[in-house]
Structure formats: C-alpha cells, structure tokens
Image (tube, rainbow over all chains, first blue to last red):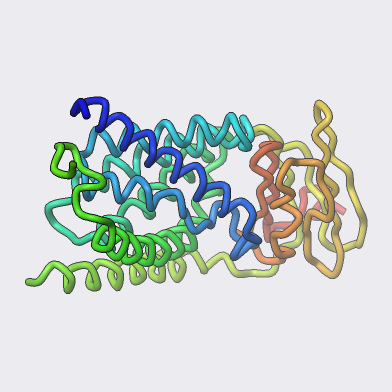
Length: 172
Length: 120
C-alpha cells in the first residue's frame, strides 16, 4: 500500500478510536461530580498512543480532529473552547516531555496542563480569577488520571501488533 | 535515574504541589455570610446566607435556581446541558465556589457582612 495512504488511514483509525473512547466516557457517570472539569480523559489514550508510536504532528492532528468531530457529533458548542485549548496545551507539554519521562509521566503532565489551561480559559470567559480555587483539585485529579492513563497506554502500545501503528511501512 | 522512577517522583511532586496549594488557599475557611452570584463576569446579586430562600436567575433562556439553607448555597436546578452545577456540593465557607460553565454563572462566598447590614 502507498505509504502516505497508509499513514493517513492509521491516523484516521486513531481519530475514530479517540471519538469512541470519548463517547464511552460520556456514558459513564461523572466521577467526582463535585469538581467541575474533573474527568478521566479516556480519549487521550489515542493521542498518547499516536505520540508514542508515530510522531508529534500526528498526535496533534488526532487530538484536534477528535476534539472537533466529537464536539460536532455529541458535544456542546460551549465546551469546545475548553476542550480545544486544553487538548492543544496537553499535546504541547506531552510532546516536549517525551524524552524525559515514560508514558505515565508524559500523560500526567498532559493531564495537568489540560486542566490548568481549562481554568485559565474559564477565568477569562468568566472574567473572574476566583476559579483558580479549583486548581489544587484539578492538579491532583489530572495527575492521578493522567498517570493511570499513561500506564494503560504503556500496555496498549506494548500489546499492539508491532508495525500496526507506525509512520513507515514495516508491516505488509 | 531510571525513567520509571522519575515518573513516580513526578506524580508525588505534583500531588505535593496540589496539597500545598490547597493548604495555602485554605486560610479563607471562615464561615461565609453572603453569596455573590456572577453572571458573565458581572456581579448580579448578593444573597444573604442567613435566611433560607430560593432564587431563580434567568438570562437569555439560561435558568439556574439557587437555594439558600442552613448557611449554605447550592444550585438545585438548571437547564444547562450537563446539569453539572446541580451536582456540586453546597458551599458554606468563604473562598468556596460553584460554577455553571455553559451559563457562565458562578457563585462565590464572602465572610464580610453586606454594607446595609453593617449600617443597620
């Protein structure tokens, strides 16, 4: 198969996985409903997998595509600025920390960056700095859920058939 | 240092930062006497926590119902998509807050009495 067509299909498949994971998370009852913005971030598994097995630009593509498509399919317009800014910030931090940490650490930093960005965006939208009161909770939640997701992504990347998700054409 | 050890240290230090931030922001734990309702960045009402009551805030079809009882404030019903604000705990201490993200509505608490009650 043509190499670029293959890479495109793999990325599209990862976007589909991310949307599916996001949908599954929406069906689960909110864990910690008392903290707004606290979520598991299952869809980030796909971004992490892309970052680990492909490259940073592909991961950004998967992240942005799944956020936009997810918002059009079952999200709400009011949540989009939060989701998009959080996703891109998480991607940037994860791409930069790739050489320093394993997936759990990378994902943890991504989760914290996502949540901090959401507070920053919300403070601007609400024109009120009082929202930073949620920061300690969201840093803790982002760290723990990010770490666990990174641990899960570690297992996923190890168990996937080698070459299934890759930039080059190793598998036949 | 092994990378996996670094991950664990990172997790512990992040949790320590969160705990430290929480501890530092806790000096505002005095019981509140008033709830401020902010809509779209503007202070739209101050509700006394001293008497039980229910208030409806409506703006452009966005409705949130705030109930005051036993010195606490919470949102009992709202027509926002997720209804997350109705699941947040009742707040009673200065510094605590409730937000309804889709409606850009926020409730904060303050421990200083309202101007008119001081004057009275």
